[in-house]
Image (cartoon, rainbow, N blue to C red):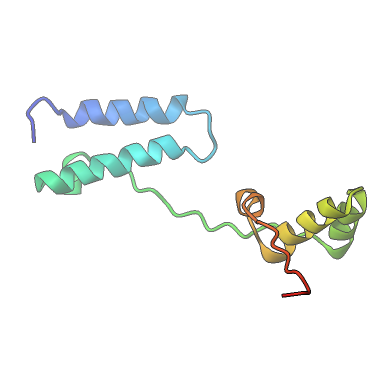
Length: 111
C-alpha cells in the first residue's frame, strides 16, 4: 500500500462524501467503500487498516397495488395497446425497458 494513503484522510473523505450526498440511497458512497475494500484486498491489507464503515443491507418490500388501484390504472388508459402494456408491466412484473423490447410477431393462417 502506498505510504501516501493516510487512514485519517480516507476517513475524512468518506465523512465529507456522506454529508454532501443528496441521494437517499447514497449509491456513490457505497461504491466508494466497496472500491476501497477491493483496494485493501488486492494489497493484502486487513479491512481494519482504513476502518471502513459497514454498509447495511436494506430489506425493502415491494409496493403492491390493490385491485381497485390496478383497475383504475387500466381504466385511465384510452388505447387498447396502452391497457395491454400496463397489464404486461404489472401482471408479469416487467421493467419498462423489457416491455419496450417486446416485438409482436404474427403468423399467417395459411402457413
